[in-house]
Image 1 (cartoon, one colour):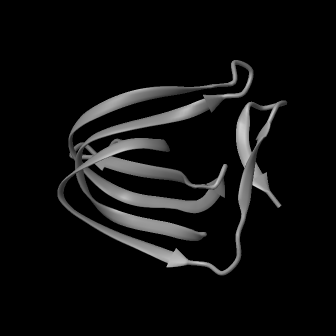
Image 2: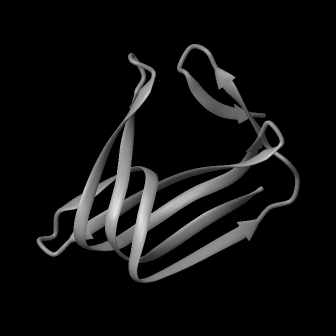
Length: 105
């Protein structure tokens, strides 16, 4: 279990937002020169496997900022990623009401 934070430079990202009513993520792809202005997330466990939940924001050359649930990112120059390990275990379970894998605490 742990937390993740990062910043850096990317040239391709896929980010999404969750539509609770439809119980699905809507993802969009973005390409071009972008700064990863913030990345934050956690590492938990589901079904005995590591489970990452990460959100990020990105800014382009025009100062436009996009962000959301991070599905994919291609680093173009650098990525300074920090992982902080935490003691203990936190799992996840499916919440049938929202369709999300929520923390099981």
